[in-house]
Image 1: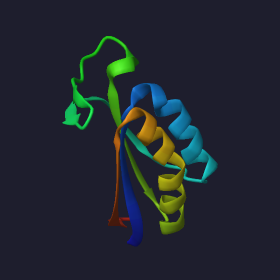
Image 2 (image 1 turned 135 degrees about the vertical axis):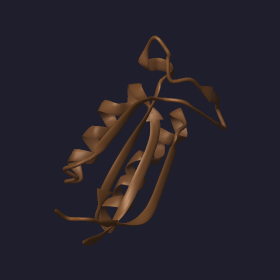
Image 3 (image 1 turned 60 degrees about the vertical axis):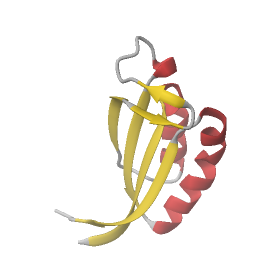
Amino acid sequence: MRAVKRVELVIDAVELPQVLKIVKGLGISGWTLLRDVAGQGDRGSRMGDQPTDVMRNVVLIIACEYEQSKKLADAIRPILARMGGMCLISDATWVVH
């Protein structure tokens, strides 16, 4: 087992390519994507069944090193400020197989 940071990002689907470019640029090689998620935040409700990515949210789950999580948070903060969304960073244990 290995201690990691778990990063959960809720972002607009249209921002996904830019966020994945940042993730890859930081040397983060693995992530899980959940599409068409629904929820409510400070910018109102989002339903998971929108016809285009303009009003859809996705969740990106990442396990990475502490330093990578700090750099990722700094890099996506402007996107979150502009488009809304959420970034949660917590301690996790990766069960290495």
